[in-house]
Image (cartoon, rainbow, N blue to C red; front, side, top):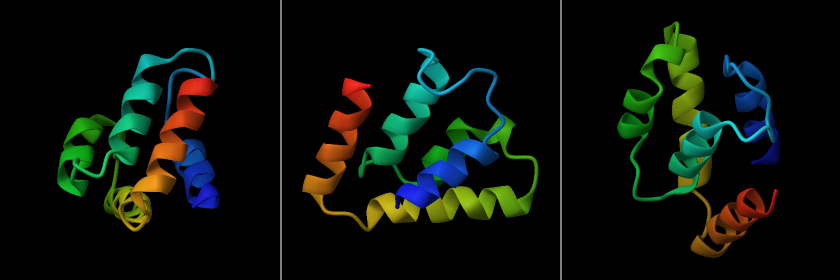
Length: 84
């Protein structure tokens, strides 16, 4: 899962750097971690950053990685993002 997160952040065309206080990055991360947000909702939120079908499939796979995790793991991932 960590590898998927790294790949997602590298492939995601952001206008700011991780850890710089970028609100968009924080919002996307929260939506990835939140099991109540569907894959479709996540893709709608970042639609302007998805240039092609391959990127859309990568977003689907990333979100599915988070959906496959336990609630405890998701809580730990959320805590990690808060503590950065």
